[in-house]
Length: 240
Image 1 (cartoon, one colour):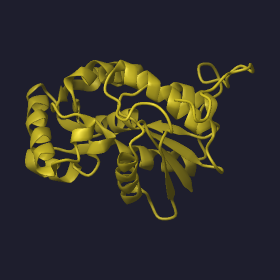
Image 2: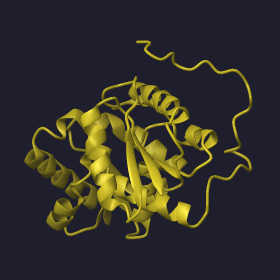
Image 3: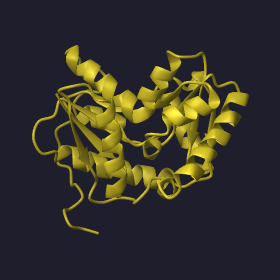
Image 4: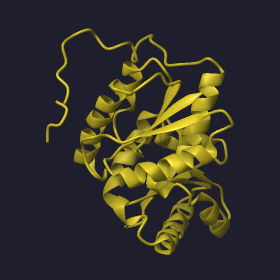
């Protein structure tokens, strides 16, 4: 089984980190390939970045090399998953949706701990669109930017634990890592807070494997019907 994992930004080091997390979660025989958009934002933190990222990732997905069995979109709260489901004939699993669905199996309400406060509204909207917003007790920012996450692991963990406590005070029984760049923090934070912590990358990989194994893919009845045939001008290769 081959699963393509797409970063939502143009930072290769983050793609490498996401791929490490995806491979550690994948079952035997699953090949994980990592993909970085060749244009778009270096980190996605806000509406503008998210829409740019969505277009760049869709451009990347239409040009994937070789066949894949499923796609994991590793942008937490970023746009594009619905377009990718129209575009591709294989299952598309978004880490936001995957993490939330698994969290709903572990407790009545979950909380998301993310990067900057400015992204919380966007994540809330994404959860609402996915049909799991009503189970979210809180989306809490750590005050760290996406590119800050790797600079000091102790600071990142401390910030996550503090934000996690705030989410739990708001009623969360399960926590979700609200950024693909947080992959790897789940065990330490879970131990510190005494509650389950779900990593979206691992959740998405496992759900993608399940869909492929069950022979299931996106419905073409209604909202995810194939795009209408028409001329579309994509971002020219090499353009700034």
